[in-house]
Image (cartoon, rainbow, N blue to C red; front, side, top):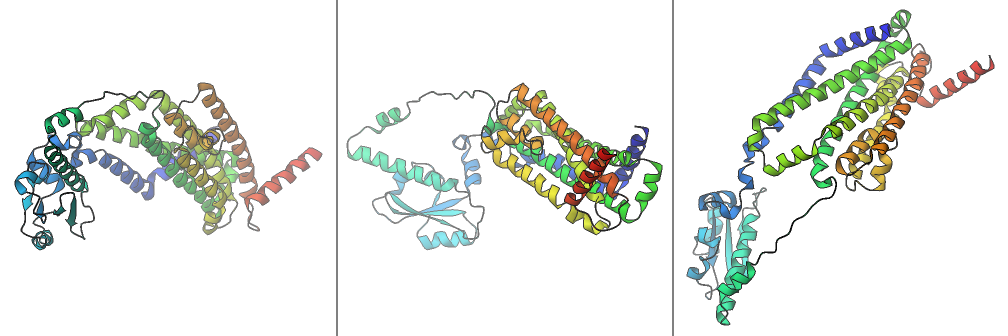
Length: 422
């Protein structure tokens, strides 16, 4: 245990001092902090305000200035401008004049009234981010114009029709259990962070082991401490650093959230307050920490199989594929959180670190099921750690032919048989 702690401190300090770690951490925290300011610059509060409740100037600013031309003589301007949004538009003499104004960026869009119930919308072809709101508003305005005209022509009181249309049916939706829709982005964010951290630090562990073996540092280390102490110390150091970054992200994100809380939409605040619970954080950290340990041990073992740093990437291929598959299971499973894919994924140890969090955050999962899945993950991690230590011990001083995972497992099996014989 004493040697493990020494290796841990050495690896922890070494990784902490690297430029890559410092730059990566600074960028992660800066991005996290910056994301919390998005509602402040995108008008989080204003977006909650109904379009029709805004002033004419605010409405024009949102949809952009527009013009219209009437080609049908039966459509009278004085009747049309009674309806929104034509009361905010500017009348033009011809379609060509509107096109000229759009090209000169005097107006944002234009409506050509061809018939009472037909129009053409003109917009700049280069306007990639065109606001489609104006299209819906124009259609609604023309619909009301034609409806009122029909009522008058058939001696129907428009006011009575308006009263009938304004009859409100009250309804409410009560969600039973957790809201999958509300928690989708919480689950997505948690899974993405775990995926990023395991990939980054797993590769770092594997490369570190390969480098020590490549420059013969491994021989010196083995003479001073055991192979078990080396691999366990490295893995724990990577685990502490990776989750240290996650904790820093949470703290920085919380700080930014508190600074900009007043600009956040009410619905988002409600989702965060109701769905981010202590139980959810416990489930996430429990599965994430043990799952990261499992993968870090495998990464370290695979790194010990190569004799050159350049070969480390190819040796990591199997575990990379498995981990990416685990990520895809969680992501696709989120589309149906009560489906079989996410249910089985939350139980299988190689996929449960991400799938259980996604399933738990988006649906109701029994406590016994969560505990059972965690125990299975823990036992699997212990098994993988044992096998990884054996592979690491066998492969660290092997400088002969390049070994792969299958070959290493066969050697371990032979050694086990020999030990039984003797």
